[in-house]
Structures are given as structure tokens and as C-alpha cells.
Length: 247
Image (cartoon, rainbow, N blue to C red):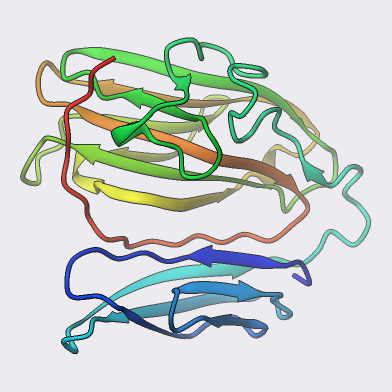
């Protein structure tokens, strides 16, 4: 609450240009009808159900609904607010990250970064493989509104609704989310309230696991672990076609 927030919506298909609209936004936020950027400073803590609609030039439309939670500020009890991850956008290579040698690079194609010059490309081999990217971080005491956020791109050569490949987000031994080849999407903001771990030093891990054929790539960029700020949890994103990985 009372902190600037933004969320860039995206769409594919149809006939450009697109026109964007949204209902149910938290007070203080608005959407740019030409770009799909939701921005502003939310003022009222609550859980809001937002429906975003995109309309193409042929007047065809599609909608997605997600939840935006505006949390109260910590009222001075958060001992050290702000960003806690080291090298959250991977621009310093593998600095701060464990098991990063084969995932962080200046990738192009499927693994191209959302911003900057580097991203973390996990899985995407097309054969049985598991790899994990990790960082150990201290979440300050009293920061009960701490939020882990990331932009995640999922690109898969798998088809249909059967789950073959998985991507798991964990704090310590606690699983925050699992995504699969069925959840294919462009870069999409994913956020989790990790305030329950305030006062602890924990390991944040991202694990990709593939079966024996057909690649699924999980690409990360622009991460943050922000102590004492708001939470935004969008759900429902456009799909994108898959591609093969070579590295």
C-alpha cells in the first residue's frame, strides 16, 4: 500500500493494434488502453478480483481474471525493507546464485531476456534432465509482507493437456508454486507473499525437470525479494508456440 506498482499485460494473435481495458482494479491503479500497462499507487489494502480485456482491430476480444492483493505496510516493524536478492536480473552473470553455470547467460531465441542482456534458462533440453537455480537470502525480522516476484516464460514443444515437464518454486522445503508444459506463456509476472519466513535465512530455489523427449523451457528474468511492500498475483495469460533448444 502507498508504494508504486505496475503490471505489463501482453497478448498474441488477432489483428493489431490492441485496445486494453480492466475492471476491478485497486483504487489508485489504472490501465493504459493503448499499451496494456497497469500502473499507479494503490491506496486501499484488500484483495481485488481484476478482469482485463484485450480487443483487436477486428473487434474480437479475450479476457483474463486474476487477483491483486494490496497488503498493509509494516508500520515500521520491518527492520530492513527493500530488495534482498543479489543480482536479481542476472546482469552480473552468476554472482549470488548457486548452480548457475549452465543456466545464466546472454541467451537469444527462446531464452532471450525480458530486459537487460542476461536471463536464466532452466531446462529446455528435450531429454531427461533436472537442474536447480538457488540463492540463500535473509528475510528481515518483522517484514511480514515480503514478496518474492519473478517474470517467468514457459515455452514447450509438448502438446495437449498431459503434464510431462515441471518447474517448481520453493522457499526452503516449502513449495510456493509448480508450473508445467501445460502452462505455456510469454514472460509473465508471478508473485508470492513470503512474509511467513520473516526473521529467517532461507534458500530460494527454482527447479526444472523434463522427461525423455520434447523440450519445455522455463526462462526467468527480473526477480525480486522485496521486504515490506505489496503483493500482486496475476493469473491467466496468453499462450505462445514452442521451439527447440540448442546449447
